[in-house]
Image (cartoon, rainbow, N blue to C red; front, side, top):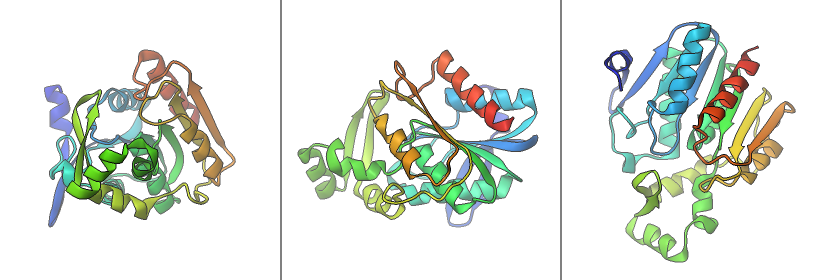
Length: 252
């Protein structure tokens, strides 16, 4: 992270709760909000590419770290979907104004859908990048082996190998809380434009999930774009170009 980028990061302080790191840029509307994935932070390639594009076009932009992520306070293993959604909602309410386009990557796609439901009057469009709503339910229904499920339920935490770095802790608390925020069991009440981007080479979130999200959304303006050779991250130059073009289209 550059010194100039570090100087732009602010802390959103909340009594009795972890302070949240965020970076906001003023500009024209609609603003753009980026929500990262499970264990990621706001300095990733997609977040910074979107921010640079927003700056060039003079649009407002927000990126943030959930509690236990990046430069925010708190412990990652203590976090849950409900708490991370509350983090995003608190910063969204405090530092953004007017209509927003919310971009969510992986778990951030779940958070984005929850945010759109809670702030339907301000979230005007959504972009999902390998969006992963309800992923905690899938853990116990096929994603984890029987032995891994037993470890999770008995020990309260499972350290799952990750191709992106150190093993990721999956906690029983995370899975149990996730059950309170499931979206795919019924209609998703969002009527604005939605664009879902998904790599068919995604080894973490099956691309068929984007089709299911499209089916569940109330909106009729939903498009799913499948990238046959794309992976979970979709951070290659051609993937970023597709993402930026998608957001430009929604702004226009």
